[in-house]
Length: 209
Image 1 (spheres, one colour):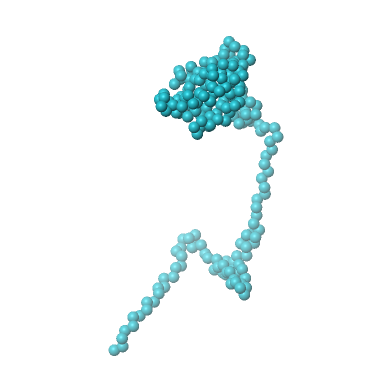
Image 2 (cartoon, one colour):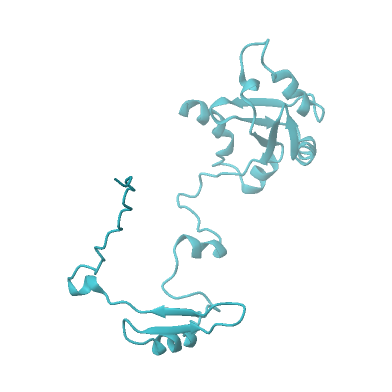
């Protein structure tokens, strides 16, 4: 697979050409991404290669195609810059048998520089955050804690466990609500006081003798 990809990567390696010459040469080349697998089929009964190439031949009959099946993309090369530019602009959004073909221009890659260039200034912060915050950054002020005074007031009015506390007074239309606090028997290590009273069974009536 690497040998197949290197074969198509050679036109982009221009060590002996100027950048201006490389850009002029690459204006007539572009990638077609998202090509359906049926285009790469070797079976003439199934392959849609002729129909696929017809989309690009309307801009120039001398167009050439380099099929890269592992990446599902095709390198399209036009004989001149004018036809390549027209095809690049006219085929930005093309649908082919349910697949959306994406056209991407070929970016020049030179082997003159042996070092990687720095990314754009706006993107460096996302790659490696600096030790100091960026210009204009301000800390977010935390809001004060929320204190529910109604809850505190209700808790302060609660009486000792076992005493009744009227939460809501009764009216003519609704009964009152009374809360009776209970002791935490689990904290004292005692078992809760559960009544052991049993329901009295109804005696079976017997006929009088």
